[in-house]
Length: 477
Ligand code: GLU
Image 1 (tube, rainbow, N blue to C red):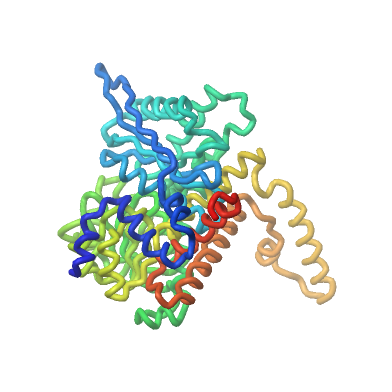
Image 2 (cartoon, rainbow, N blue to C red; image 1 turned 135 degrees about the vertical axis):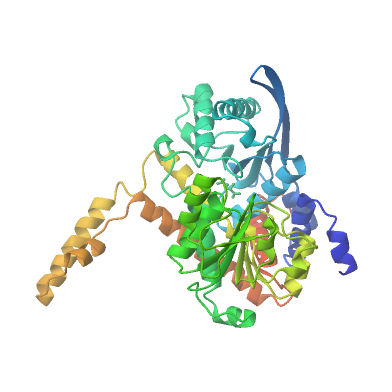
């Protein structure tokens, strides 16, 4: 290990993100003061509040960090985990700023965290904690459709977002756009179709795009296309689960290895992710899945022989101690910060292609943006044009039949005359976003000789966009 790699191994999560920032900043030509302003967390709110659990009061530690106010509202998920701390929330909030810029979601970055292990509480207790946390955010003006808009993250989901909305409405029921104060809500509570699968689907589009370039794949010794590629996934939560299913069903990939808390399993012929999730629900574990072999440690997934490794759990998973043993040719970062800055130096040296988190997992915030737009417009996507489009397509099909004298069969007719539903439009918008953004990043990567990796290219792209926002304000010379 080189001296610098050794020094970088000591960095905290936030320092690790900033180390990646610095690597890119030198290529941007932006003024020093402006770079310092972009890098800093603009507002950090740390709060402790009491909640009565059973017969005793517990003091809960929680955070909301708004990293950048260059665009408003700020945006980012809320994490429930025993490991939450200020450094982590600051790192995650800053990643949100860069993520939003990369996928052209016009928000600043933010993140929230509540230091609890959700498994230790009943749903009623979790509801109490969530409502109290939301009240604290309202009190300090840290939530609102034009201020700061939370969403799900590790340990939270649609249920918690529904509680947040309901609490917000209790205080601010008269606000016409109140439903846009949080995203990732249940569909019947002002949510949007396709939000739950969005991060996983985004990872699929990102990976499919990366795999489509012959010159890049030649360098890795891989063929193009997802069909038959061996994928290992760490974490079968919402992101890992949907990524696995979509890569399998729509991409034809083989998910050969999956890891969770309880261990890891392997099957070179591929694991059926839907059946595996069912097995875990029934038995409480992914282990002993029919046809698969149990591996000795859950971290084995990171070192397994595969084409693509998808860390979809937490940060700091690939570190200097295990990075030299990673065998994957591509790492698609579905989680935030799964590779430390020091480990990345080792992986780049090994020639591994890393699809960076701030682009790879941006599908979630992209569809959150669509949900927020839906809330502000007070109308479902597709409602105005679906029937009009259908009628136009029907007329076109009738014209083709008349001119050719042939009849189009019912299956083809249904396909050709379908008007888009909300889910079709959400998926289309997400695919467009992920494909366009990959090409923007890849262009920087190809154009700049000194840039060796997609993360630095993604940072350069993000800093250019955020920098031009600030420069337009005329604050920096
Ligand atoms: N928590 C997700 C993320 O890290 C989603 C954020 C959002 O939708 O605002 O990107």
